[in-house]
Length: 390
Ligand SMILES: *Cc1c(COP(=O)(O)O)cnc(C)c1O
Image 1: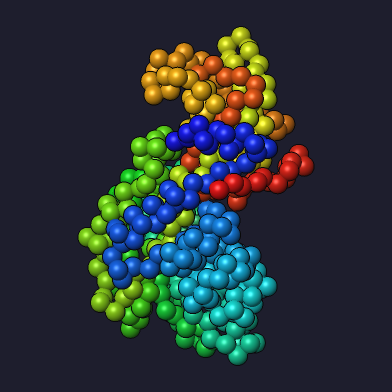
Image 2: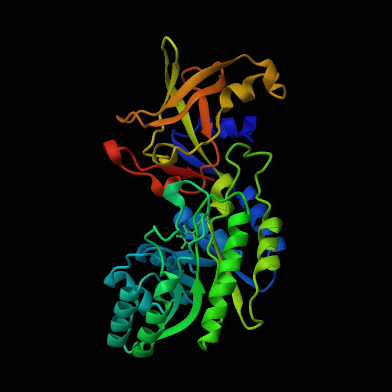
């Protein structure tokens, strides 16, 4: 929710830029801490947003870091995350990335294939080190989310499949520079219905029992992330219902008392705290469609173009200027296709968006853009690097 003070602040800054509401972020962190059982470890997934200012907040909150590239591991270390709180996943870790993580003694590699086990072992042996590893397992659980952000199905490239477990265990006996400490799962992103998480728990219980029967009681069970946010209601549902989320695991996960539970949350922590703020450059009236052309485009926020993602779009200049802003239904609204300046037809933030009459110079907020927004921005069309404001 934006106030006239925000408008005043924004008016003095060149658009476009990301605005992050750190007070909301702190409240979200408090809600997680209140809802998560004490013996659960929360890692923040850097790929959602790796801004150092935000990472410092997560570090102070006591979260670990979940990284999916060598540079994310580096960023986490630069932001003073203890190496013992850093986990490193990803299907295609390069030798340089693995060596960097080995040199920094990170807590654990989440390993995604048998071939990768062999390579990490080889690189660790050259350094006379033993690498902690967890097996990233593909549990074949459908997350019922957009197909581009589903990761836990057999057809997806991620993780080791259950039919490979026997081979993994016989292989591990030969790999003396690896220490198997856990199992890792991550089934996808933007999961709002909790049923897939229940299904995940049931699969984890079976898989965990299988490993225990084979003589492997593994101390760390990592359930990944994926909890979704409400993109339609960024104000009324600014903080996710973390209690219901953690309750699913409390209720359905059956682990041994020695086993420790980890999560890797990204979107549900940072998503609602960020908005992309831009200005209307032009209004173009068509026969069936009015276009509001913004100074922000898919180069700043690619989610609508990439996944047909919905983001709530608000004309915050008109909302705040109106004396009846508390009665939005009494303002005349028109329909606009809200588009960016990039030379691609997919550069569209929303079609037939209902907005108060919109004019050149008005500030437009594209809400719920804190996760997978700034980190996915690009320099296509030689655009300027996007700025961020707190
Ligand atoms: C992306 C990712 C996450 C975070 O997912 P969110 O949907 O943002 O919570 C966690 N773990 C792994 C391995 C990931 O790739």
